[in-house]
Image (cartoon, rainbow, N blue to C red; front, side, top):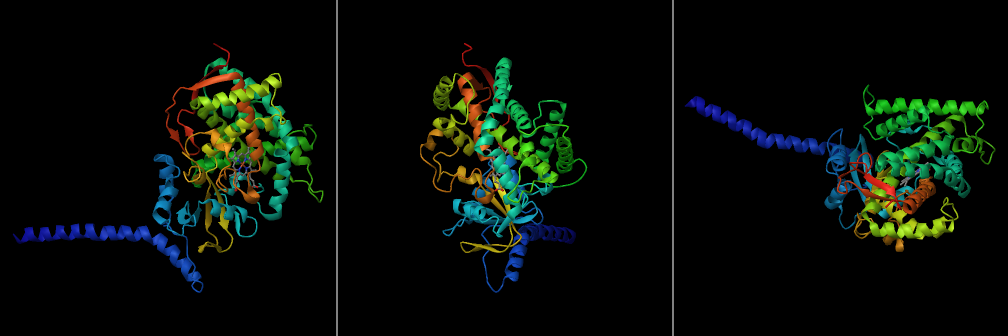
Length: 496
Ligand code: HEM
């Protein structure tokens, strides 16, 4: 009898421990990261009594990274993380700032038109610095990594090479034959995976316009290295054999070597190529007559391919996808482009045609808004920064969440639907930040728009297509795309 009672008491003790101590322990673990950072913040600045933005920093070490990954990868609700913060912490004085802890860094998440603008505009004035998660993968001398006058100088070179009307005019001419040939080959095949085929033609055009390379085994290998680099850039920075990050570092090294060899052949005059991006970057001089050094040319060529390849391909894929689902928009696009084409005898689109392509411009902006290829950009606070009564502490990472503006029903009616006509009116000020803003606003924004316009023109005047899996699920990591890569049937417009 006594033995039974002792055993029951033992059980009760363990159950009590489980029900009481374990939740308490879990609660302590859950709050210790947040409490630790808040205490360190307050102790350092005890005289001023500043306020951290509202939020929570999640578990020790991993912070809220797993929650963010869960929303992106598994729940397939890419704005879910921000919405959850907003629901929980936005009060009457919501400043659009929340504290969190992501990928090893205490972080402030910024997600309102005004707060985004504040951060983006005040970069480069000693308030916020560039802070890419893996700077060595993009190249230390790349425009996206350098600051101040070095940034302004490099950016000037790049803008002249890819965003100036004269360079855009040349690029428009160079890329069209390949686009037209690619579309003809899709029609011959009859069924294609749009994501794959678009990547192929965009990459070939990038190789042609940036380094005058025609498709060859080398460009195939370079393509593979870029794929490895892009995959590793989005992976956790674990440098072990077998990790995506380790592979990306190797790919980055190979790319540097390949482009450096190309550059040296040009320097030794073994190759006489000037009218491409690499030639332009090698020849340009700044106000003091100084040219870019070899590292700067190579690192920035890699950055430009990196920045322009995935973004352009993904946007074109989404245009194909949405137009297949929006016959009315495709009809209007076709009417406008047929007129341009008739006027010009079915030839190339030139820069001079573009101002008259008003509806096409709406399709371009709507595609870029809905595709949201650059979901966020990164900064680091270089000093304690005050914003609307909150302090962003020195050294904390700042993630400017661009995409939440473009999917917010307060700014865009039925925001997830593709509706080019919404561009009959300009968006509310500050709510369209697809290319970022301030001194680091996308250096390729005009090139991106141009490529999309040209592709839309040739698609609309010559072809028709249908999605074979119109209800395919959409995945959001590393970038949004339908799981089947937008499998389409594709044929010439006058083929019936
Ligand atoms: C629709 C397609 C594109 C989107 C949505 C996009 C978006 C962005 C965004 C949001 C930034 C700002 C990054 C920051 O603030 O840190 C950026 C920067 C940049 N983009 Fe793009 N981009 C696109 C296409 C391109 C293309 C085609 C190129 C060139 C081939 C390009 C080259 C760059 C460069 C060089 C920067 C860095 C600018 C600097 O730091 O000064 N982008 N892009």
